[in-house]
Image (cartoon, rainbow, N blue to C red; front, side, top):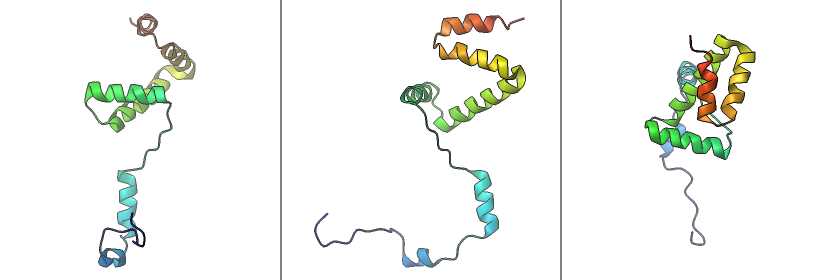
Length: 107
């Protein structure tokens, strides 16, 4: 940036700055429709998420929502203790071990 220039802070017009704010109902509806998701994940988890995103061609947020739903309903269905056991099997990061573990649940 050259010396003496004032940085541009706003791309809109003065009219945009002086418009009345949205009605409270509109703001509440907007909050219900979309909420900001902030995830703090490890680099390894981010790598896995990017890999899934590439394989499935879906938005990362959809994959995260599926993962949360899966975790939530598994916890309800099999209980806290069994879910903990399953998560320990998953943390081994060994697909073959996980297949064997899950085969115990098949009828």
